[in-house]
Image 1 (tube, rainbow, N blue to C red):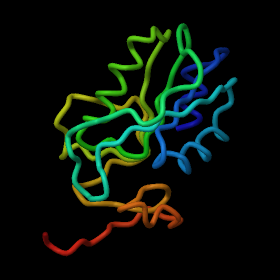
Image 2: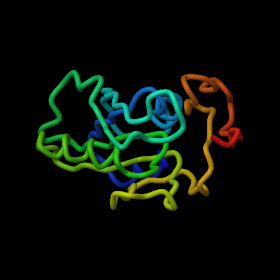
Image 3: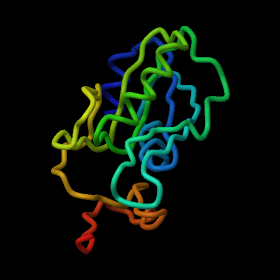
Length: 156
């Protein structure tokens, strides 16, 4: 993915926006594979609360520290699921007039899509299972697992 981003933005600078907290580990690995000039910022949004189901209500918890006007922006996300979170972020960021706006997602779960959001860069497409590890959590647990793992939850 880093090679493709480097190719797509050859001779240009890219501004990565890591979506906290889940994308932190993926972002740290991705940024080291990009061979063009990179700047970095973070945003945090919430739509999950403490469970495994999205609430459908997205709220901004941490905004950017700097302006993105005129920049080539790539939003780095751990998982593209319903599209509600990324749809919200894209609307917010587009109003800030970046030169370009793309999405890099470690995981894509198209079966769950509610909003028509597509990632420009995808690590892996996965089935509709709840996953943890490599930064992804369940109620703030399991982020430290070195691999992405399916979490089996008891029926609710």
